[in-house]
Length: 171
Image (cartoon, rainbow, N blue to C red; front, side, top):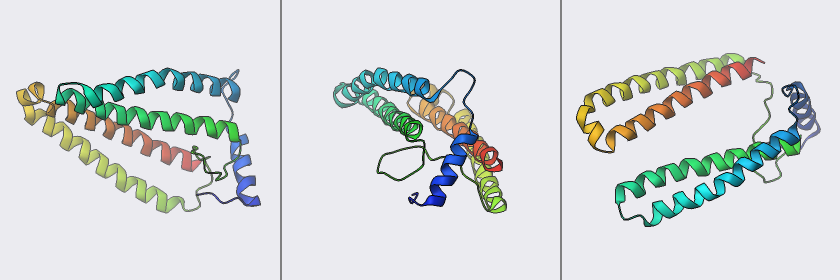
């Protein structure tokens, strides 16, 4: 959590100014696009909630519930992005927001930790790949295959996010 101090505000404002928007794309336009996206997802969330709560087939309710959890997280992230752009300063006012990128003081420790996490994620990716292959026809005729595929996609996402941490921490 950020604390409202002069140095924190100064650092956040400096970080905010250092991030240049693409030519022709301004915060207000991005906020508008994100808001439209959230409005469009409201109906989607309602539909997944209905399917996950009342559909007669349990396996369909299960999958719809998984997707609903993802969509709720997406909704929270998008709202955080909007709050981030609207605030202009990284302060803790109780609203969910995406933090500003600030200077990482211990580059070496972060690099070591990210490397460790990357190793775990690579092992996980390989283990899931191997599991998917071992499932064979069982993976194609049950929920096991799609669930392992979903876990694999999450692992790929984690690996991309870890690469982003390393890249952003260097700046």
